[in-house]
Image (cartoon, rainbow, N blue to C red; front, side, top):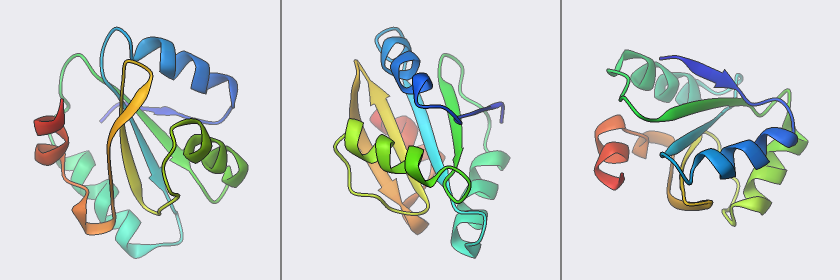
Length: 108
């Protein structure tokens, strides 16, 4: 998986703009959580879909940015959490053991 590190608030504007052209995924990962590590591992082992961007947010290191993501996309904060952004809006979100590449792709 070619993750793009999400580390700055300004990147949210780019995510919104990019999502008008193709789907964008944000994976919020807690480096201290075994469930989060397991979910990330499942995503990493999946074939990377073409035509999508995948952002990785270390929410321990960037907690305020994680809160900003929740605010901008009108979702309740979870960890781990995956968000699908299309046309500037979060159209799908899932957390914990519900994070699955096949289910994510079904939402695209």
